[in-house]
Amino acid sequence: MNNQGRPTATDTAPPRAAKKTFTTNRALQLEEPLIFEHGRPDVTGVDLDEPETFASRLGGLEREETIGLPGLSEPEALRHYVRLSQKNYSIDAGIYPLGSCTMKHNPRINEAMARLPGFADIHPLQPQSTVQGALELIDTLAHWLMEMTGTHAVAMPPKAGAHGELCGLMAIRAAIDARGEASTRKIVLAPDSAHGTNPATAAMVGFSVRSIPAGADGVVAVESVRAALGPDVAAIMLTNPNTCGLFERDIVQIAEAVREAGGYFYCDGANFNALMGKARPGDLGVDAMHINLHKTFSTPHGGGGPGAGPVVLSERLAPFAPVPFVVRNNDAYALREQASGQSFGRMTAFHGQMGMFVRALSFMLSHGSDGLRQASEDAVLNANYIRAGLADILSSPFGDRPCMHEVLFDDKWLDGTGLTMLDIAKALIDEGFHPMTMYFPLVVHGAMLIEPTESESLASLNLFIATVRDVAFRIQRGETEAFHAAPIFAPRQRLDETRAARNPVLRWTARKPIRG
Ligand SMILES: *Cc1c(COP(=O)(O)O)cnc(C)c1O
Image (cartoon, rainbow, N blue to C red; front, side):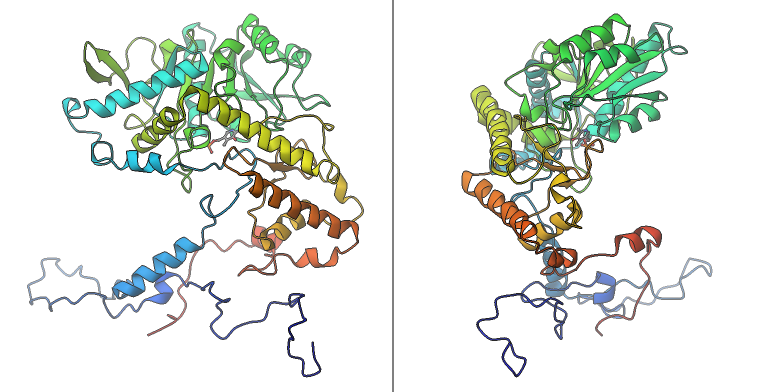
């Protein structure tokens, strides 16, 4: 600062407390009020004739107050939604290193295919003779999913990974019922490191969860599974590669032990992107596994949907698959709609997420078998490149050994600094990076889980590594104070998370409209 208190060209440090502007905008990052605070309830954006007077037939039930809809002109409405869309950080804007989420590029060829009118403009209640191409596409995708996983059947309806878990466990419950063991087999085994959806799904289907510990090396040992097995166990739910980014070394012996004990092996296949083209879960002894098309096969993760979580099934679970499914009679495709035999029934209104199916098949066919294998290899290579680039400066819970598609660090390197992983994540926001996954898996203290996917270039990985190293060097030099306030460049600064949790404001209440 010079002595007038004005910034000079030599002031490179950002102002500690963000200065307010008159408009509350921050440079070209524009504030955007809610549409109800924006528009004027007494005007309309379109030019309508006054309605003719008419005799009300509502018998005195007419509204007396205005409905309160905001009136905006076309440019105002357009700007509102464009500004909202710009607030969303996305994989199309930059690296999205969220571990376990597999945020990869969605090639635009997928979008072009999904927009073909024959796929985009059809209705699930159309006569089947008019949607033969769509049914063929579902059948072809189902074929490749079984081929890649070495399994016998696939249920296409589930609309997310968690929904796929539900489907798989419902098939397992039906199989156990059919054996007359519904009253004895009530337990599902799941490791401590499981994604929260695993125990939640088991509980939803009516099972109790028995937790199995992972070893000091981050994987589940077959001995721990054997110790937990018994005539009361219906199934095990195991993620492979697991949520620590490690391949479950004993998976084949675990599958055998579970089968010998009369249980089923549900594999959480959300991380199939590390295996596709390399290993087939069916060969490892898996009975049921969901595949997140929106992770492995690139279709977008919407805000809570659309996703698609088809479940592949082994020979012994195939008879219990839900309806509907596509069957082929000579040259015609049909949907088998009625549950017969041992099928557990229907779990969704229609047959799945058509748009996601088109995108996933487009991804598969445009990559080819060699391309899919390379995508797995590149995803694993990229994660290991980040691991190698940060191993000397961060701390790793399971020693410095290779990972699969994601790399896990813990917070030992922050000991004595007064900082937590949250501060690191917020500092990365200031640097223009969406933070990595934090505090998951729960088995690792202060977990930091990074998944670059195959989408990132060497330059992009190098910039990410250099940025995290710079953060770590600043901490090593004792420059920790600034971290507590991060992010300082974001339109919203550090939130009071305790207050938000203790005193959540869950309803919008009308304020005075901003304009008008
Ligand atoms: C993403 C994920 C899920 C859940 O998938 P959704 O499609 O989000 O329901 C389950 N398990 C693991 C390991 C995951 O990464």
